[in-house]
Image 1 (cartoon, rainbow, N blue to C red):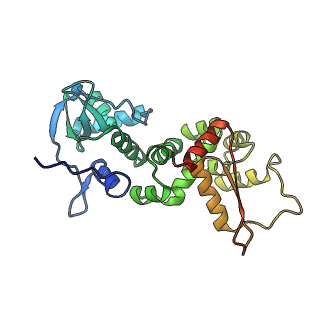
Image 2 (image 1 turned 120 degrees about the vertical axis):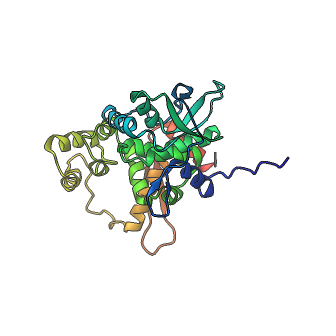
Image 3 (image 1 turned 60 degrees about the vertical axis):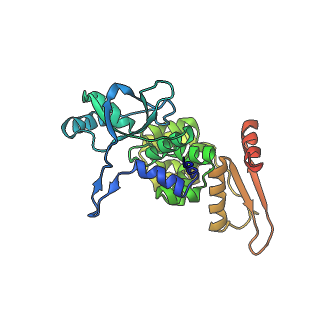
Length: 296
């Protein structure tokens, strides 16, 4: 009996293989073709993944999808794995929206692709499927990137290559998680765009400015001017150092997004040495940093 080949982990071929199940295959003429389903199964034997990172499903969008499913059926099969809790049943790895829409459309069976994924792979696929969706709000998208980095050790560069997103896009989205909860809630309900919110990252009066931006209906450019001119923001002293070069500022932003804390790099132009300052908000955040630095 031949040994089973070890499963490749991490980004690269491992994650690419997972993503090939999430994304539809492409025909030779460039059109999207759904993979052939392994089997059709009674819908009551399929259950949601309790660790699904996506918690909110737009009712109107589900109704639209249900109407399409009612007319055309489910084109792309659900990806499932055998349930460890209920023998003969299956747990959804990807495709919960299609499963919910099928229930609304009162379908009796759904097409499935059965995969032998472990718990880590199930969560990775669920997150990947979610961040590939166009209807995620910015905070849901950012939380997906953060989970992929924190739980699985993926870097922004790796995510950029695997997910087809720019590194700066991923860094900018993750920075939104450092905003106060009230500002994040404005992003979730669509009252504030990600562009508006990015102008408020690190601002001591982010909540007040966000409400002012919403009330006045300001553009992103106007929001930038407001954030820079706000009297609560500390003004530079007359003896302030010369502005930092763009590369240093970009490194600060990327480190801040990765570590989820304020970062300051003091590096004089032409010098070989400098200083790096990290500011933590709580002892729990300090513990997280120490765990990262120690390789835990």
